[in-house]
Length: 362
Image (cartoon, rainbow, N blue to C red; front, side):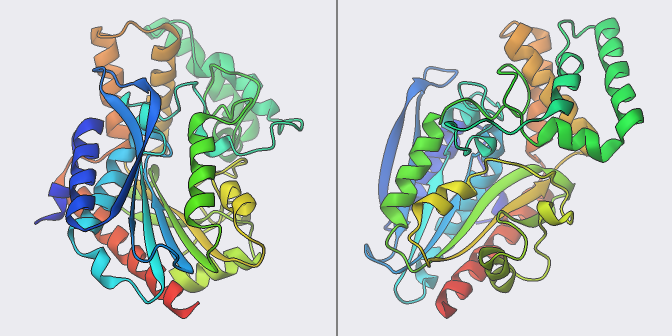
């Protein structure tokens, strides 16, 4: 079976393929229903497939759909790993846990965010404390999501964005837009004001599958940054901490880190890494990364996100404009061509084996 056949064209198709592959591989499967429905009234769920011993001391957890529509990529990788024999390659005392569509609502509705417009990878902060400040975003917000998407409205908004870049530079613009913000609930990269359903679900899964482990490897599949088809391995922990050092040891010297300024990603707060930091026992060896696959140039990706948020605030479902902007979202986070899918899966399989090799040495 070619790599392209592992990827589905819809959330429902991706879920069906994943569950069938998990059953064929002999995995134990658990489905956690989401309270809302998909765009065609289909059921939504986070599905979990586990291979290996129930009490394994070493766990490799791979997750898709953190950013909703990016789940096309991650789901294809997970389904392919199951179909191509991952279960036969497990080291002794090792389990694999595949978390499919941790944000199923965003996946099904082709949105990056959850059902409450929250960027899940900015939601893992302590909401009982003051949220991190991002004054740059407050300045940009009115221009990022104009009330009119016509030519004149867009031109005025774009002038505001260009003025910010002229004053502060492109890197500061990317940081202000995508680093995470907690003041504009209708805005981009909103981290929320309370833990989302997906946040609570991931924490429960970490407790159930990883809390008793002595060593954990983690890969979170993402798209939208970097060269097309290349999977940048991005460390999700602070530079030079024990987890970051172990991530480099297990996954290789090409691992980057936003906090060290070596990644295509901006520095972000409230990431899914906090679910492991809070949920693993003290002394657990942890190596975790985001495998970030490039699609379109950054400017086009941010434009697609702006359009999607405009639709959420002001759009008409089913309209020609709706269809056009949703098509741009899909192109920004999913490569349709066979070469992209093949590159993506080949890279995913490589890093899955690196994770298992690292666990074998732990």
